[in-house]
Length: 138
Image 1: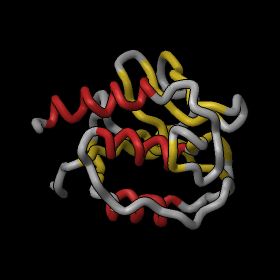
Image 2: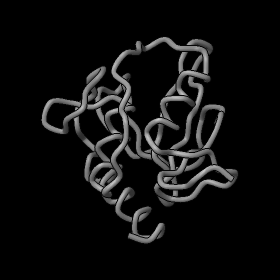
Image 3: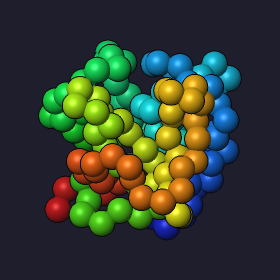
């Protein structure tokens, strides 16, 4: 699968999960997803396999462990984000969050709304990094 095909498949998979209920550590569209689960399911549906972290809480301030998880999952930092990439953002001082880039916005598991949503526009939170599946280190 080309990188463009993979990106389109990730976007389609993420959008297909809009409306799924939020559940911390959720890994299934049937029972609920958190931001890590959403990314894992969307990437898996695009044929990407990788390690998925299981031990984390809602509060996490250090980016190093998350960046290590992303690398172990076969994602790599990129300078310019495109559809199908992941955004690592900081919604609050003690919180990190993943969102999937889609044309015109993001899909993410919104704990406050209790479901996966598509959000138009730019990120309302500081973006700490962009991550792409299948790219090797530069």
